[in-house]
Image (tube, rainbow, N blue to C red; front, side, top):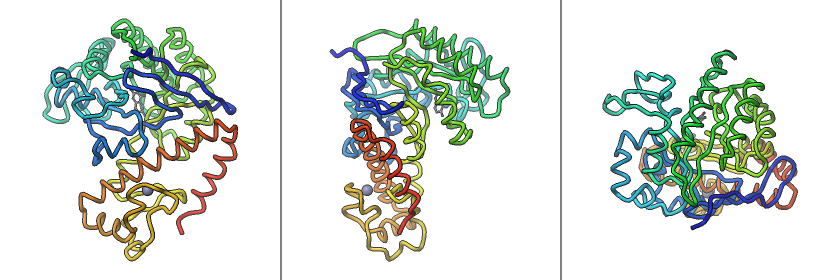
Length: 372
Ligand SMILES: Nc1ccc2nc(N)nc(O)c2c1
Ligand SMILES: [Zn+2]
């Protein structure tokens, strides 16, 4: 059984090309993890997800503890067998989802209690219970339970929240069941306050965890602030451990974050926007709902070799989305996740060649050129 570790293979400025080794296989970094919230990457079968080149997917403690239940998933053989994904899985710890989805939630030192958004039943999530749930799910990467302060909170409230998350990190580390190939990641908090970000990163670094996430971003602060926080935070994290920016983002967000030292990403954007007809292409995003596509026989993205782009015309995709046919979200989700994986593969190659700056420039020119 392999030990959980991240190998740094090359660097280019602040960016790194690496490889994460987990119980369920390797992950080339920089990596994008499609979000599989309720044990499915929405509208995609696991073989579709694998075909995009994705190696690791994300699951959610919050959703799975409510339905079908963590003990039930364990009884059914764990999340890998349940959803037929035999690659690595990272699960978020639930705190963020509770604050954004649950009703009547109460957060205090012990953890968070809340009512299910599904049936109103009451649940409690402590650092220990969150780690236990992620163990029951058999997640390769467990995320600490944390609090994600909403954008706009004042310094003193963010400081209290960040220090609570640090105490929860300690409790998660004590509760985590060490076994080869599995790791617990800490989550840096601190809002947009440099001093708090540095304190959180330094305290978590001292815990010598196998990986570090940067949380509390992608909450509406805007790209410039996101990048500024990364410029403050990443240098405070161990150079030989993977860094995961949670909930990010658009393609240009990802490129900028890789250039500032981030190795792992997850975001609902490629799947969620795919379901509404938005497609990411080398010439920027396009919306297939737009009437201009209704007789366009060209592929979605001539630079893309995915099954959607090599089989169907924009006219057909426009028809599917307009008709609200199930195949529309399926085909666009596949293309978008494929596009994100191709973006990551391009970034990995550019870092290996020491050409990330030029590569990022070329990508930005394409996106700004706009659709033809
Ligand atoms: N933008 C995000 C997305 C997911 C998060 N998950 C956790 N656990 N913590 C955060 O701060 C997050 C932020
Ligand atoms: Zn495509």
